[in-house]
Image (cartoon, rainbow, N blue to C red; front, side):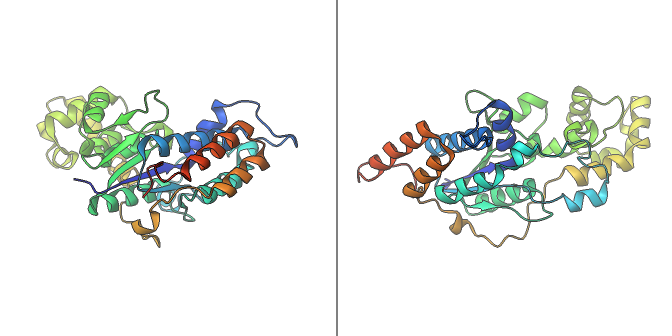
Length: 301
């Protein structure tokens, strides 16, 4: 049985979601505060609902160097971060600091790979990992010890191995091959022309790993589809390198350092005051008073 729970938040995913979900929120100085307010509310809700023993917020920093070296157009279609969101990132960093939730970012290393590395490390130490994200790439590492929490789904969107298969028709271990065939428009990764979700799932369920099929293409009776795979073999193999998460990123933080102890309440209340989050500040003030009661627990260890 897992000894504890690690909650890892996909920071930029949450920031963008909050930014577009909450409109026209600013302080008396006219500074946009919608993203940081929504971000704080979502993260606090996760902490309260799941009561993790360990936690981290992971953010992107700089460009995804390794994948861009392999595909120059990787994520090239994405627009720059809006100025009103960019200006709120430092406040998100400060929220993490006063909440005592470690924030991790590495220049040139995608947050996805850092998150995957932390989740796998937790699994190895018999700690359950919860990844809060709406990014389907993480489905490739889902198993009995690693599950996803999709903030886009009302009920919290718990995604386990059964949910992956129900959604895409393949097991988590097949997601890399599945996305390599289908492509991923979100990351600007081209797939095999004419191969969509159903065809990709059918190929993998019928013939198993792509490696075997590409080595023995004659097993595929559909001559037209077989030729498509052969014609785009180089693209498929490149896609697999791009889609596959790196679960061995060198990190200078240990799981022990990610143990949660609860917020710095005076600093968190002061942070709310500076940003003029009155109702949130009052909520946290009441929470801090309850926390001073030995019989009250926020779930931190």
